[in-house]
Amino acid sequence: MLMKKYKLVIFDLDDVLIKNRNIPELHDDTINVLNALKHEKYMIALCSHNCNASKILDRHNIKKYFGKVAGYCKGDTKIDNLKDILAHYPKLDVAEMIFFDDLIENINLFKEHNIDGCLISPKTGITMRHLYDTNLIDYMV
Image 1 (cartoon, one colour):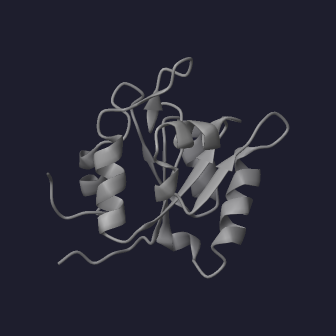
Image 2: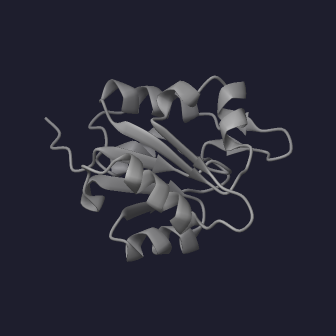
């Protein structure tokens, strides 16, 4: 049985959950990943630099998976979004959170706030393998 370290999984949107910013499409494993996390009872949040994040999630019918959607525009920073997410989950410790992003700068930024991170290739986006490798799940489908 898997000993769960994390309770909250935070995703970036572009190149992690979706590909092709002009006509956003879900990466191949996005639905499988979200379903697996839901099945395992993780909380899920979005921290994106895309002003249309909420609309994109709605368009692909995946907004229902997210307890918090923090999409920011010019002037805001990833840390502003992080603070918004932390305020939404005040009882969680940062050690119970993990962040998935395609940019190492953002992973390092979250690590400065003691939040574990996992770098995602923009070519594949998030995959079930990432969940397995970070011990979010203990099986592969």
